[in-house]
Amino acid sequence: MTTSAFNPSLRLLDATMIVAGSMIGSGIFIVAADITRNVGSSGWLIAVWVITGFMTITAALSYGELSAMYPKAGGQYVYLKEAYNPIVGFLFGWSFFAVIQTATIAAVGVAFAKFTAYLIPQLSEDLVALDVGLFTVSPAQVLAIAIIILLTYINTLGIKSGKLIQTTFTLTKLLSLSGLIVFGFIALKEKIWQNNWSQTWDMHKLNPDGSSITYTTIAALGAIAAAMVGSIFSSDSWNNVTFIAGEIKNPKRNIGLSLFL
Image 1 (cartoon, helix red, strand yellow):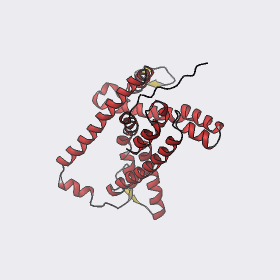
Image 2 (cartoon, one colour):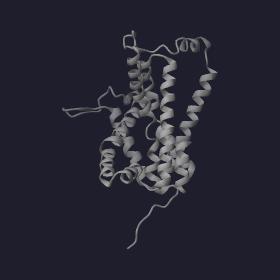
Image 3 (cartoon, one colour):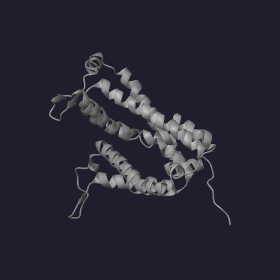
C-alpha cells in the first residue's frame, strides 16, 4: 500500500507572505472608524493597535513553538488533538469550516465589494441586481461571491498558482501601505497634526450625531475591550500558515520564523 504525502515547496518568504497577506486585508481599513467611536482619541486609537500587536506576536511565538513540535498540516486541529483528544480537534475542525473561516471569508468578500463600489458605482450594495421576492441580491453581493469562487478555483489548481497570487498581492499590499505612510508624512499639515494630538488621552464615546460621552474608569476598560474587537478581527488569520505546515520546507524553523516576522 502506498501513502501520499505533501511535497514541501514553500520557502520562508512564501510562508511569511501567507502570514502577512492573511493579516493585512480589508479589516484594517474598515474597523478604524469603529475603534475611534469607542475610544474617541488618537492616543487610545494607537494604544488599541499596540495592545493587539503585543497579543498577536505573543500568540504567534507560542504557535511557533507548537509548529516546531508538530510540523504537520492541520494547524489548530493538530494541536487540539494532541493537547486534549481527537474529538476536540474534530469539533474545532467542523466549527472552523462551518462558521469561523466561512464567516471571515464572507466578511472579506463583502468588504472587497464595498470598496470596489467606490471606484465602480454600478457595483454598489444599494442597487438591486436580482429580486426573487423573498430577498434581493445587490451587485456588491454578486461581486463578493464571484471573487470567492475565483480565488477558490485558483487554489484548486495547485500550490504553485496559489503561492504566486499570495506572494504577488502581499508584496503589493506591503509596498502600497509603505507608500501611504511615506506620502502621509510628505503631505503632513502641522495644524491638522496638532488637532489630532491635542487631546491624546481624552477617552470618550463618539455618537453618530456628533456628541460625546465621558467614560467612568470601569466603562473606559469596557470601551477598550469593545474597540479591540475590531483590531483583533483585522489581525486575525496570522495562524493560517500552520494549516499548510506539510507544504513548507524545513517547517520546524520556517513556520515559527514566518510567524515572528
